[in-house]
Image 1: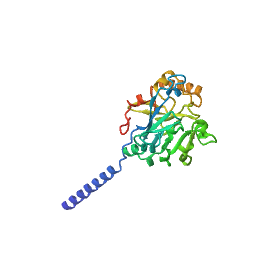
Image 2 (image 1 turned 60 degrees about the vertical axis):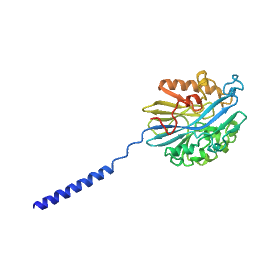
Image 3 (image 1 turned 180 degrees about the vertical axis):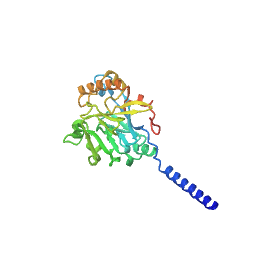
Image 4 (image 1 turned 135 degrees about the vertical axis):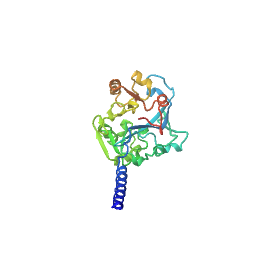
Length: 286
């Protein structure tokens, strides 16, 4: 009888260990915190900054940053803008466009994504602020990502006269085959209010910005080309080439009120000086 009791206790203990081990392996994985990565997606030397400041600083030069972002959310990933084409990395001296812009790439977006273990095939959503070439240059890296775009922008980009809006279909031809969600206003990307696309018309027919609510860092609005550098933001200037200059100024004033109401910070994607103070990937914000 004594031996039988010992055997029963041994079997019971063994079973308990197995059950506990099984329960331990079934514990859910820790939830991925909301993160924001910033990437260097090129540099743009502007040979005459007066096109951004009509009537001012004729023939003065200014260097602009070109920044892309990755939002990592528990429900998926969103890449915001794709920058200048990675192929420019092979042209160290840069490539000149419209005799005004000299565009250079020193590190590819593809390499930066792989460095943090989010290669292009892992991206679920592609948010494009607008369809100019310095924002769609690497769109072809993400053929499986769902494009999130305002209706006016989609219609202009894929309509009969995209060049009328400063769009070159050759720079985003692959996007025609992407899954797409057409937007007609603000859009909650993951359904919890933490990542919102904001309709910010003026620079192009359907321009949009991205609002991210980071628990530790605070609330951030990624500008797209709502504005290109701080001086134009302070003085509410619209570049001469904007689609609707009057609407641009109205939108800038609306966004300023939004920032104040939500205690949010504006990150200007092209502002070289501001971007110098922002941590870039592989560092991130939470």
